[in-house]
Amino acid sequence: MAKRVILAYSGGLDTSIIVRWLTERGYEVITYTADVGQGEELTEIPDKARNAGAVEAIVEDLREEFAERYCLPTLKALALYEGKYPLSAALSRPLIAERLVYYAEKFKADYVAHGSTGKGNDQVRFELSVWALNPDIEVLAPVREWEFKSREEQVEYAKKFNIPVKATKEKPYSIDRNLWGVSIECGPLEDPWQEPPEDAYQITTSPEKAPDESEYVTVGFEKGRPVQLNGETYKSLAQLIEKLNGIGAKHGVGRIDMVENRLVGIKSREIYEAPGAVILYEAYRDLLSLTTDRFTFHYFLNHVPHEYAKLVYEGLWFTPLREALDAFTNKISELATGEVRLKLYKGSVQVVGRRSPNSLYVEELATYSEKDQFDQIAGKHFTRVWGLPLKVLGRVRRK
Image (cartoon, rainbow, N blue to C red; front, side):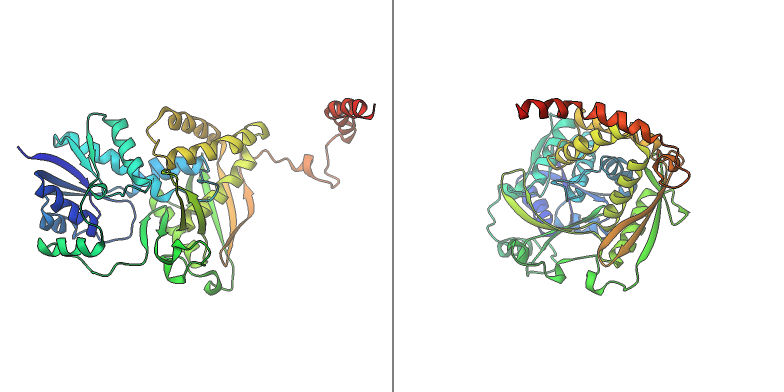
């Protein structure tokens, strides 16, 4: 009896070859392809997979699930890996792994497989996610084991088995795109001193070529969930994100260039495009500053974004830690209802206004006008008490 495997399948050269490579070794391959907003036409995927040797090909639209169950919790945590990367590629891996496990159990497969390399992060994200959900499933990663040393050898293998490939010349960049952003690496980007060539960017306009007029966008939130753009209500979070991606991209918003620390210990130069995510991060952070008390807000900023980003990046989505952090961020988002107005101009995004029915801003306390109701005499006594430790320390130092 053939060994059955569910393969995460993109339709590219690597995964097409993996189908045949596994088939040649006695595996019965079922491919799985998720639409997470990569902007590609997927109608040809089933035929491509079967032509490569798959016995079954599954394609699912997961854009809404990706937006609600993965992008939204990460937004509520304001999670940015190493303070910059909004985790676009990292977020899609646990969702895809979850579906691989589902179909492995449905079709009674003992294996799932992915096309990740041995030096990247995705191998960890896929494998840890799979094992967390079903520790009895074995994960295969043919790219780490097979005999091919170059893309040319892979192309020859594809030709041998009549596997159609779009091109034989390797693209200079490795690109991963979904609803939350685009990840770009390789080629000229491997020199961290070189400015990214303009052709590396996939969706954003160069800030120099962006409109000379700024554009204002107002994002409305209900309990931390983005629900409105410029007064228009969106029932679909995925559609709202796609709309924001288009608006931000036009103005060159969301370009990120960084050298990051991969899980395997090497540093990697990556560039990202995440116009919608960057706008939402700016808006939500500002709304939280308006609706969250100082003690909670400071604790949140000092602890949650870094820890949440780290666990997403490191493949730890299916852990009690993530669930506990979600409980915290969902609690503080209960009051995060309101609107934030942002100004987009030549690559920059700036919050210029915010309002909320749960606002903790009190004009009568903040103002220096005749409306002022703050008891300034109380400030004198507050300062004496607050500064007492330093006053005592100063006396000791002067001795």
